[in-house]
Image (cartoon, rainbow, N blue to C red):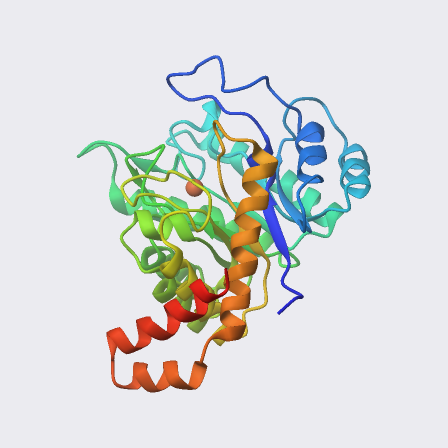
Length: 326
Ligand SMILES: [Fe+2]
């Protein structure tokens, strides 16, 4: 298990603005500065990078130089299809010109993925959705969502696209809001290069069991990526992984291991007030302990307990393995 690779969204190392601290929670950082901070994290192999690159006018080569000096690779590129221009949607914007802008921006991100030999283009259509009853034609909105993703996937058959679903925020209802709805959409698109990026916290926020969601995505051959964090379940708090729901996170990892899912374990955390390097290190230490816990898990006894749906028996085995690993 020592080969497990860890990653993080580069935004983990940025500073943030919200609707209260409109002056930001820290001095703005460029993507280069964020990469240099990511390089200080123990055992970080890859990052997911936003496109356009934030904090300056940087070339791919400049980004690559910063990554190289920090021994980091790129797992994915996240085009920013959720900023002001796209406030009424990217794929589902009522203005066809803005929909074309979204398509163009994502197509540029495709070239960035090719440049860095990254695994995927990450689609987080955060503004695609609605807020009020009667605001949208639901059928038309869903069709635009699928047409937008489908067009990109068919134009770029050499690349993988992952959709990261989330129940809400910034839209009150998001078009890709859950595992089941996203999977249904992907199956309707019907192309092999569209999959899901399962964010553990978004599954919690949506009332899902992340373990069950992972199993379903794997069964349909659509689990292309994942990231972890934690929250109190009523909001996408993006707190440090392992802080609140360790046993559910452990079951999520168990399902990945059981299915021989071999991807990177990524962090999607927002340390608004914490030191970003220390927060990432703390999360990775937890993930490593969870990996040791998987090694220690009495799989035969667990399977036997599960065959009887023996809740307490199974929990005892899982808790012993996880908490014994610390
Ligand atoms: Fe999130």
